[in-house]
Structures are given as C-alpha cells and as structure tokens.
Image (cartoon, rainbow, N blue to C red; front, side, top):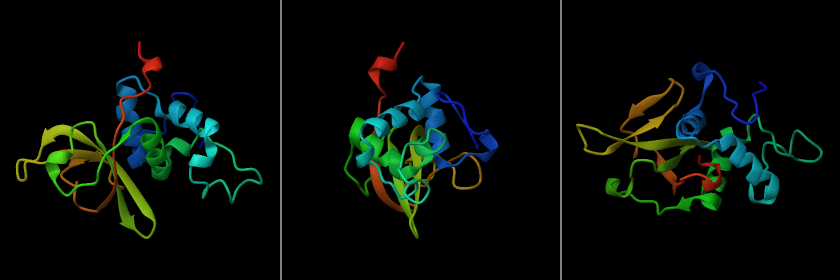
Length: 159
C-alpha cells in the first residue's frame, strides 16, 4: 500500500504496533516517517537490511514501510534518542518511554509507556497493538524486553 510522504499513515483499523508509536509522535508534531527515512538515507548501513536485500538488486529506503518496522525504530531511537538500561524494575519505565520486546521466533513488538497506572499493579500502562487494535494495558513484563528508549524528536521540526 502506498502512503503519502511525509505525514503518511495507514487506516487506523489496519495498523500494527509501530503505527501506535508513529501516531503518538505525530500527535505532538513529530513525523517519525520522515525522520526515520532521512536518517536511513544518510546512514543506511546502520539499519538492518533483511527486508530490502531480497527485493532489490540495490537495497534502498522505502518511505511506505521503513518507519513501520520495529528493528528500524530500535536503531533510530538508539541513534537519535537515548537508549536506556533494560530493567525488571517497573519504576525505571516512565511515561513517554518506548519499550521493545522479543515475542519469539524473530517477532518483535513495540509500545509506549503512558501516564496512567494499573490499579492492580501500580505500573504505568503501555499503549500497543498486537493484533487487536490499539490497547492500553499492563503488559510491560509480558514478554522479554530487548529495548528501552526515550526520544523527544528533532528540535528543528518544532514550531
């Protein structure tokens, strides 16, 4: 599916976990589609190439999908944001933090910590989408955490 660039999005009913992160950042004026694309164009070797390598003789960026792949976002947030320590202490995860998980069998997942807490555990909730549409749930420790990041956006894009 072709999407606009910059500012493109898929219909909300067809989104995946990365779309929730992208939409959250767009809500505060940050276009991850553009920011990831620009960084990939300038530092392509830093990003995984497992998708492009099988499709093109010369791997290249794709504004339709690159920002929607968890491993690409992990590289981007490591490069342009702040990588934080992995922890089993819920107090180390704060609203706005991004968390990535390994679900097994090479499947990765991403969510964003929000400022609402679970009444049962007292942990901050996570907004994510794992096949049932956008959810806000206490899932921080449901899977093996493989990434923890903070990203405040590119200051040049702020109005």
